[in-house]
Length: 405
Image (tube, rainbow, N blue to C red; front, top):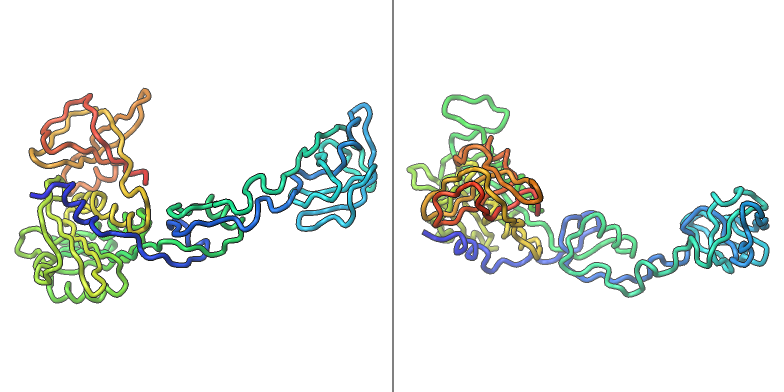
């Protein structure tokens, strides 16, 4: 039986980020940047007002106070997007709005709250220092600065900066397109009335949602019955739009485990047992002329989800170009006794919280591989080593956080 580490290294072997593509800035959100971006101009690109007020010379207002205000002649009015038509000279001021370029000759801005807001004369009740309420050219970003490096994940803050330096398009690693197939003649679509012996396909939705959460594009194919020719033709049809295929079900040793029977004949998918619970039966390989990777996951809902988290998600994150491909791991103190099978690494569903400044974790309901209710309560996977069969309360264990990338 293969260890978790050995199987993980096998599925990660040779995986590289997808080749970069040119994306519009908004389409690049969530993608990993594939180039360094430098600033073609400074930020701010010019000295501008940080306040609505009056641009003045410091010498003209140095004596201003509530008891002895200074009166200046207002010679221009400058909203954002415009420049002053005249300079500020001795005894004059220019009304200016936030973001407008500083006029020639002006040394500071007096906020409108410190004045009577007048036109064509303004009464100023307070003095200002040189440079007060002025955003200086380049005080945020200098010309030629690297504002984003290759490998940066583009979120709203990064996109704001890229837009500010004029980049409408960027080179990024695109999101992988993942086709998800649930197999089994017992499966029906959600919303379909259940007949005896049938169940709703939850795996397709679980894995599709997990694919999207990982940052990839999910194409869910409806349940495929246990029909070998139909399954093979469905997979072949989907290869044209897939950077990866993920199936669930049909990989055990049962008489109707179609996925294993069909793909074994192709000679490109290896089926194995991994020393873990849940998720022991695993399959991985490559299909078609593009050598599209395929993962065949178990059919039990929790087994499928845990298998995705442990094996598929890291591969997707590497294809996306992420430097960190694994879920964050913390040490947490167990609150209840947890049993585990000898020789298998258990990924138990748990609920992680912070109590008295430390992480604590409680098992989340039953640990059966069919228990979706318990899985929905979990926000982590508690990792019990292969050589441990019983974990007592108060023991610290490694915990995979499912609520953080």
